Image 1: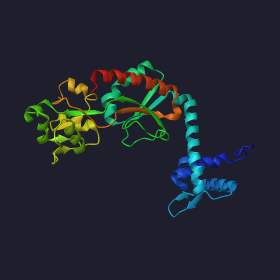
Image 2 (image 1 turned 30 degrees about the horizontal axis):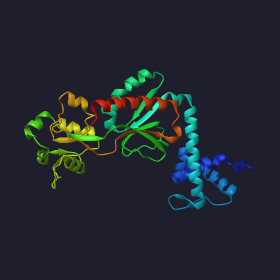
Image 3 (image 1 turned 180 degrees about the vertical axis):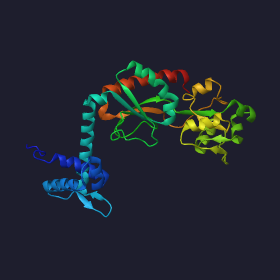
Image 4 (image 1 turned 45 degrees about the vertical axis):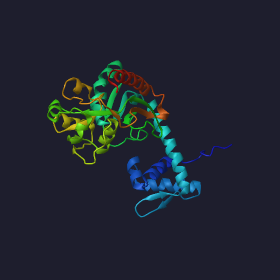
Length: 300
């Protein structure tokens, strides 16, 4: 059987994939370092070869036709596989491990551990990113991600690292001033964080959830809320594992031992098609061992 790609303008496929994904010839040209005219020419050549239109030209964008949509899905999958294959074969890339993670998880847990990993792997540099958006590992150049959630993300494999359990924490001065003796005492306390999370904790502690909010602050990062609690602004919900050093040093106290799981846990994940990458395997095995040791000592 003849190869249907024989004599096919494969360069046009790459251009088509970018235009279909971005829904713009202009943005595709910018991404590929081409002119818009060159992109249009490549698309036209592909349409001529296939004998059908691949895009509907709209006032502010282009939209794939039904046939274009089918080709777009296949082209995107093929490009992802090609990019990963080239990345895994590139010696320079094998010398850098790119990690994207949550800011609090990075500062409170991962960053203090990375020095030991780099000592054990001197030929592998680490790049750590804490951008607030959920990074797309198949497109944004990251090798692995540390996330909180269910552990089920399309196109990714994952392993659970730590439980995502939360407990009230506050400064010793606040605990003394509020005279916290039972969980119900927190109903009248200034609370930091999301009311829905506090409601879940009150239910776990056997206390009817408050009907009136008593929040003083919410923040984008758990670390910021805990910093406010250490500053005497109220009581925050925090992971006793991530803030174990502050608790051990007496900067924070746990007025009550009750914890509540707010998600299924903290996870390490990586693209399914890169499961055999040597640097990913080395980091995964090392981090899982560290997390198991940590959970055994401080897990709730």
